[in-house]
Length: 168
Image (cartoon, rainbow, N blue to C red; front, side):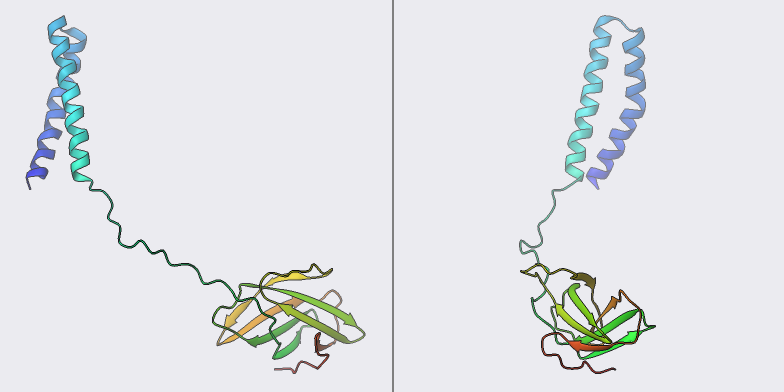
């Protein structure tokens, strides 16, 4: 309450003394001008001190900053695959707790078969045709949609095993 009253008093002092001091600086004699400069300096000093008093330093709540969960580098096995409107291939697999936001996908077409490789995390070797696509997670399943270069009716095969990926 005392600081609040001090702030109001300082504000009123600024309203009354500042215009008067400026008038004395323009119209007054030399000793009065010195007094006006000292008055303005004291008002400014009081404002700075009061501002420091009213604005306490920040309080540190915790020194431990939570680190974001990094995605786990893995090669997911597609559980289902389906062709959407003959223009894209939709792949799903069981999502992990640390699922990556993106996955690298390589699709090789041969006839009406698509061989598919999926890799999450950093890819050590560069391959021609690898696309980085967003992974969506819903209901415990990760989903990725791969646009096809040539529209058509395809069967999806796991690129590592050449086994057919079942439709949902």
